[in-house]
Image 1 (cartoon, rainbow, N blue to C red):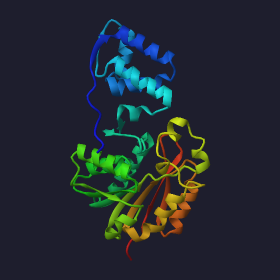
Image 2: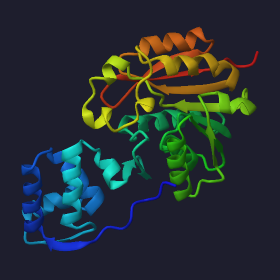
Image 3: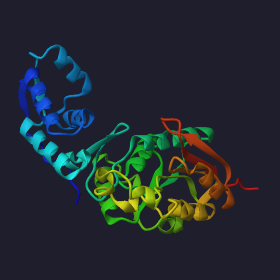
Image 4: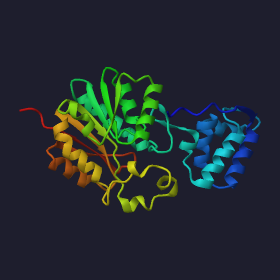
Length: 302
């Protein structure tokens, strides 16, 4: 069972001591953004507090985690290219703090926009969906966000990875959403067959990185995050093809499908959605202006 990491040992020191410690860690390698992330989410010293310490180094600060504990994590990060999120055991995402562990994809900031798109599309309807699904749930981040936004709804979260489902269960239960989110093991639409034709909205952040691109990723991603959740065939579209093929049978009439994809796949994904009978297919942009998402709707009943 995936569980949150044990409590850290706190420490109270001066700002001057903390800044000296920070310089010492950076001298060993790594970049300041990563170290400051560690300071914020392991020691509880956020960016604003750190800026105040630069101006008032004599001020004391309470570290949730001691310098020794953080230095040990930083050394492991530098030595083995291990993601800090795995070492700390959690990851902030949207308004959530998720438990994360090796074997499951670390949630990315751009995926938060899938939630915003889902809320926007629900706003076009008479109300939030009562039955929705998350394909390839991973840590459960999308499912948790939607369940919290639509407390009267029921969500079905699917993944083929036992490690992902274990982690999603941990996060679901931590937020008290056990009755609202049902976890199902299997590939894409298959576990949802009892609900085919009833799903009112479906979101998915499937694997979409082309294999040649995955092979060139930085070691911190390629060597530690699961390839199953990142890469999907030579062109990166294998999972999206499977999702597109089954969408018309699974979605209720007039239901929306929302997909995240690689930054250069928008045209191909739109064509797949249209070729498989979906309508109103449309590209949407991420925070950097890249076409990162596609939405499409199943036809309304005649």
